[in-house]
Length: 345
Image (cartoon, rainbow, N blue to C red; front, top):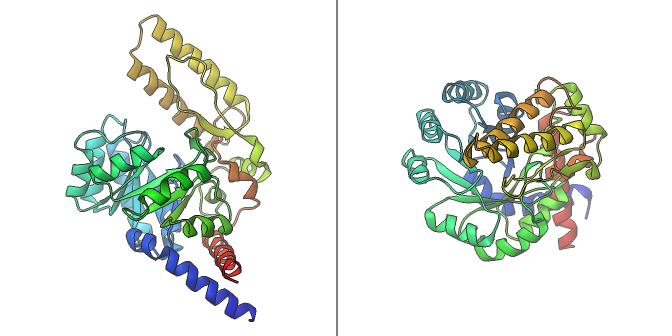
């Protein structure tokens, strides 16, 4: 069998495995771009969707007006489907959902915990599909019962906020139980197409990658931020440490730098405010979230990769150069197709 036939056969297998996920997203391929604050804005999101994948705007701490403008600007750059990622603890969550509805955004991704009462209904009333993160099988089943349309299963290898369990373990535990019920997208530590093929073979409808797209040519991340990714190895992407058990802080994976020490100091400061009764627990947790938003902006936008937060997943070692997003997608698809062909031989 010659190389052309091999690739064509592998590509056909890949297309079949991605069919459900791509149909759900309305994209050519079932690859979502993880929502990364300050990185996943109009340029990267539009480029991702234009390349055949599925871009997702990271709303993060944006105001309602800012999200409104960002969605409009993204629609001006692409006529392909894209989604919006909303943080469940955002104080204006319902108003943000209204903005998505106004722009007829087809998919809303809810991150950061269980969806607050009324949020799922509000999203679905607009005709949009709801995608949620499920860190455990029990939560996955609960979310499905509540009416979510798809799930993202993200392991601790991912960048940014992470849970305690690896992607491979979560996939083994959760996919056999729920993959037949809703489309499931696997995320965390995926940097090559061979891994994509493996998760599709296990029953995933698609995958979500973030770190791999940071150094896309279309990404507005500062050149120093991109260089930090290109230089880094997997072991450089480490999880933050919680210093006060009364202040539950979701760990964040980022490249080792002085910013990690600054976060430790910030936790001590917030814990002291708790001790003194100056802030309530909810306020304290929001203060931590605002810290991360500021630290991430310093790194991504200003290029302060020493004192800012260089959030990156462990797949960062597979990011070796800056290249167009369409080329990254093409490489991933070629690797996945070849892997499927070899496994069938």
